[in-house]
Picture 1 (cartoon, rainbow, N blue to C red):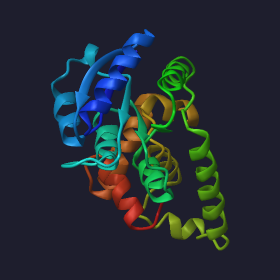
Picture 2 (picture 1 turned 90 degrees about the vertical axis):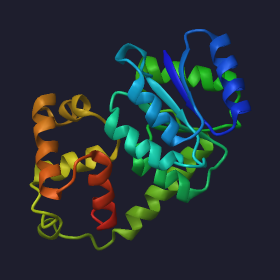
Picture 3 (picture 1 turned 45 degrees about the horizontal axis):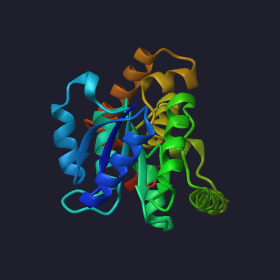
Picture 4 (picture 1 turned 30 degrees about the vertical axis):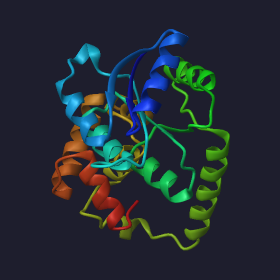
Length: 223
């Protein structure tokens, strides 16, 4: 399993690298000190060396983890971005998930637990979430459901840049951070058809990437 570690603390990066490599089954293919460093290094990595999983800290200089996940999820949709941080406040959780984070782990987890969780993620595709974070996410979902007591009508929703019902479905799936193959599987369409829908969405929204499309949708209160 190929792993990238993005953390502004060199000591944290080195400790995590040593423990994951000692656990076996892991190859650390990239170490980055902030989001921009990660994006720059990823662009130079050959395909076979690019990571399956990116462990991303949130608070970093130059480019923080949320922006790095949003950009990275658009440029490198094959990689799963997992937040690994000390922060568990609701604002950071919500922003990271909206940006495209696949999972959210706290650094207080032991290295053994992190290694076991990553193996399970790789083998079974299960999104890794620390128990405390799962509880907070449940609370966020419940709060959001309550705030939708008077939902917008479908007619009003579809006025968002004249997106079709299928394009709206796909835009919401894009917000979850999944790629064309997974979108196709969920909607029973081919990955190529999913890609064509995404291209149409970008054209209607006048954007060039997933990150830009989601930023526009969130800023307009559509998602």
